[in-house]
Length: 423
Ligand SMILES: *Cc1c(COP(=O)(O)O)cnc(C)c1O
Image (cartoon, rainbow, N blue to C red; front, top):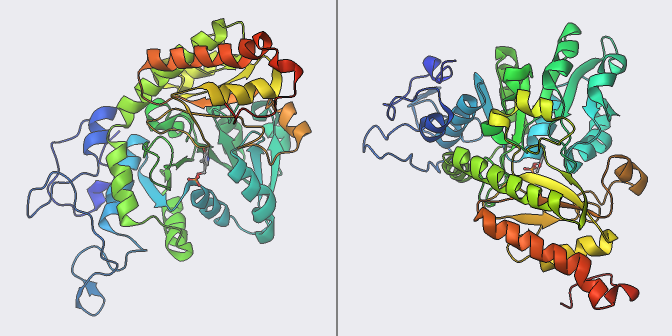
């Protein structure tokens, strides 16, 4: 793979030390030119919305108007392309805007097959928005088995995968699905948000487009809302670049600058978050207070063979979920009793977060449908950050004791305890 496949065709200023193909080097250097006039090693923030022209229709440089392209977005896109082993990448104002733009690229009457366990916002777009422009989406809980039957010849244009899924962390064999899809000329999209490009590169497993909510691991500091898509096809580049500009769901230069800064430490954060999540998962799995632990980094994960095939070094990522003993009340108490994990939605930041999907991120899904997908009321989802792993483990163990044993000792289970806010 040429780390600078994208650059070859573009006039670029002098580069930082020549990147080689390994991830950490690319993360730090791809799309990070030194400033050609000052030598600044960090790119300037280019806030200008418009760019001067020497004569009519002849801009001074590569830029005309900020929505179409700007230096900070170009640099960020170049870095993403390098990290996802793609020729091209495009940035959008959010992960959701990325999804919407890709769906908008489909002709009226198109059909999409999606895994059932998609991100809530993606499910909302697929079921409540796509139909308005004549695109129909059908869902499968076991896409590797169902995909051949679900394809409507001539109509199906896209297959949408999320691996691992949210919040049950089940996996999809991307290659298996892509093989069937490509026999029918259908494109495969993989939402790679949960793992980040450090742990999984879907294009290497046959996907045609990889998408991210940059808001999560890529930016990694919980202070930017952004999305991106990466791919190899020049036709897709033309179509999606056109829509990126025409729809205009683009990120600000400042957000591109921030996300690019975050991306430079992605490999360090992803490794540490994975290490911490494995430590916490092992502690949860050995605890008498849990019923089940979902974590792809555990060799007991039901699809561990896919982990070994698709994930770098068998890493499981920073996300895990588990069922606590004592029902939804215990789940809620657990979230109140942790001291380092913050009770909040989202994921992928340096700080650890915890939530109860059935009442928070997945509350919009009908109970029956939710439980069929394994999202029980006692399921707790955790995003492990990069704090000290032993501290996280201790925090989880003490919170389990208080959430499951504490109320029994205090006789509190006899009184309906619906929230722990008083404590
Ligand atoms: C957060 C998220 C999205 C949506 O991204 P936004 O940046 O919040 O719009 C899409 N997919 C997954 C898996 C996510 O976690």
